[in-house]
Image 1: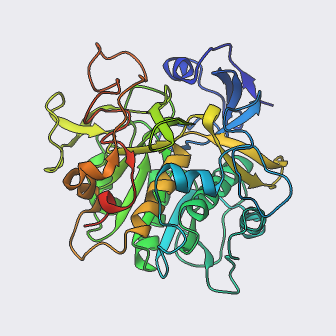
Image 2: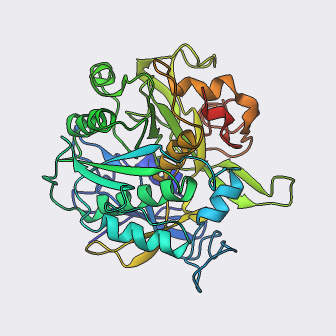
Length: 402
């Protein structure tokens, strides 16, 4: 049973999230630009993380039936690989070979590999299976003692796997399943992903900042030579951890639409994207904005608005197959895969710094807002850097290469 909240935008849902937090096992619903959405994961208990996936449960998203080069007869609603590759100028046909993108999530999705096969077949992508060495699933310690299943986190897992496939069809995928949604278990899963050789690790979850964050930084996220991406959140203006970690690329969210400009697409700030000034995390040396003395979220962004959402296939428990999803859970794996398309980071480097050295290789996002911050760049799209979209969205891979 899902808790229904009478709200008009996901950003409004954000401001009420603390007061109207759903009990464990339930998800909040709201409307966003004509579509109804629900959080895939239950509201987190204290000290826990929640996934940032938003499922479209009613209405017709603007991205419905966007694909034009399908091999299958019918197009699922939502953007698929061709649209995402075109929008962000990704060299997906040739890039990413030999690279492994790790997905870190909580709990088990027993149908992950089978559902991934359906998604890739639908869009004419090569098979990515355990048998051919492309796909691997492990528990948080690298073994096969998988945690219990969870339908909400399974939807998150499917979204993550599908977005890596969409942006980097040639990449290998490592799924690491944490035993629970605690930062300790998820952080252990991040360390396992790195130990197993992944140079790109996507984390589509977040929770409240705390005074423990600096300890988590050193224990789980300080991995030179590894690109670690983290969703900025779906609750509008305000910061989450681990997006606030200075060692990660915090990924904000946009609304993506086709356009008559030379690019053929346009992005604006999505009202639900997380952003802001961290309370506890220090500003990394490569971040130069002056309105926040601490770490500013986000760094870069990609599509996250459910109304311009992406196609996802998931069948575990309550899921029905093809669905449309948004949330910064979509943008984080897209950016991790874009890093992979750019090649392995050099040893000792901090890939979070790469976009700051290549700002001209990004499409700037200059419009839209995710809340109230006195009209400053921390919550408003503007020329150059801003909180909700960071430096912008990918224009090829140059901004994600050291």
